[in-house]
Amino acid sequence: MRPGQAALASFGSYPMTRRQHLARMLMHERPLGRGRLRRVAVSWFQQGPQIVDGTLFGYRVRFYPRDNQTDAYGAICGALYKRRELRWLRSILSPDASFVDIGANMGFFSLYAARCHTRKILAVEANPVLMDRFRETLALNEPLPIWCVSCAAGATSGNGQLRPRHHDVGSGQISLLPSKKTRAGQQAIAIPIRPLKDIVQDAGLRTITLMKLDIEGMEHAVLDTYFRDVSPMLYPRHLILERPVRREAQQALEHLLIASAIYRISGRTRTSLLLSRNSC
Image (tube, rainbow, N blue to C red; front, side):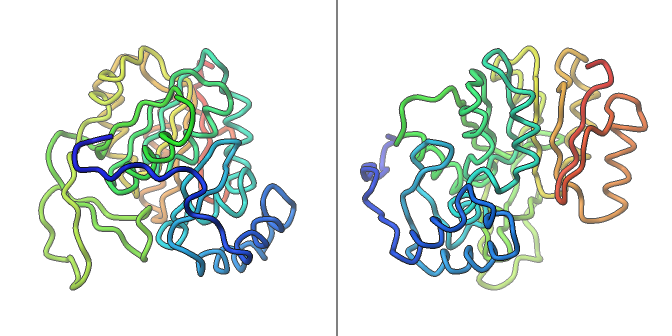
């Protein structure tokens, strides 16, 4: 526990309401959890307390469903949320593998990697609020092989601002300098920015089996610098990338990774690209 931090409340201190239990019982790891009704169930779940204790992939988790969509969907749907990505991840990871989670959010993918018995997991999250929450979840469990880093991955080192949006702390925009576009009532969070190369090397990783990146449109800039600065030994064997919303950004990312013949497309989901190195 860090200086000035409140003592950790024991697991179960934040029970679910009956309505939340019902929504979870109907959706969690069940076929309904991947259907259209899950949005209704998630909205129902979010109307309950700000904090609830539950389980995810067999681990104790302190969920914050009201202000984080990943918390809400993870609590309701479990492994049926991002199910195609998780199924692909499970086919790749092993105890000897390494997993790098850039944009870890509340730890959804990192916890699943731990459930796959992966012994080297690096979780990087720019939002210090989310990182504190993830560390709180980790403290509720037996020690897991997850190394947490609180910073943003960038092309260069520096300081920046993170502005959460859409009332979702898991979604935000990062700028290197103070932005004049911050709206009234919208709080910007000061954050450190570090090159991905430095983050990976400081973690002592010599190879990367799988890297997941969900960094709000910064994937191209971060990876372009990373691939120029590291040896091919540190190229991830597999990548899970958030698909950019803008077509130009997606084309630039595919040109960097696929047209260059470094990676091939192993699959697509509604929100992600699944890539594998051509040497694998």
